Amino acid sequence: MGYRNYICIECEAMPLSWRNETQRMNHVREMDLKVRLTKDEWDALRKYARSRTYPALKSLAAGVLEHKRQAQELHKSAIEKISYNDLRKERKEELLDLLHGDLIQLFELTPGEPTVRMMKRFEKEFLKGYISCSHLQVIPDLHWNQVFHDAMMAVAADIKEDVALRIADL
Image 1 (tube, rainbow, N blue to C red):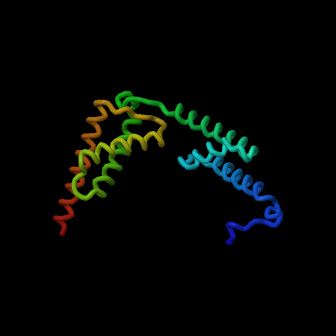
Image 2 (image 1 turned 180 degrees about the horizontal axis):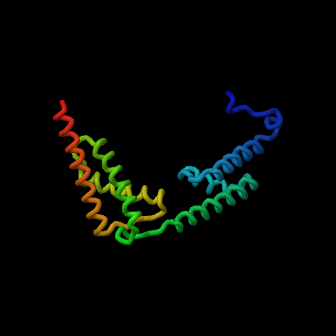
Image 3 (image 1 turned 30 degrees about the vertical axis):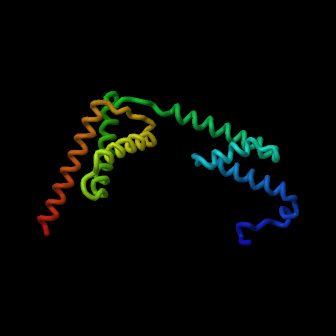
């Protein structure tokens, strides 16, 4: 049975349908407190919002579902799209510093040379990650492509130089 499955005497005396509805309503309340929901949680909310068996669960789930959808729309609208060339100087420097650090990590963790495909995927994930910390969606343009290429080459040269120095010290 275990502690997790423990039910108090009053709850155990209640009908099974009441206990089931209460458990599901507690699950919906937990989802309401979360910032992000998984796909399975979204599916569960939709399912509960269509419930014919439990009317209280249906109304609670419908309200939480509407609240989560509104929060999702507000978050989407808060993200500003801007091309790299139109960024302020401070933002460009911040982005370049983050890029440099992440590229060093990538080069150090990648055995051998990173492939072009790996670099394209890295660039896409890097820009996607920048959205979460700045609420800016940077649209790559020609200037960004040049900056990314230059940063990639500079980091690769730094890594090769460090490796050569380590070998010379041996």
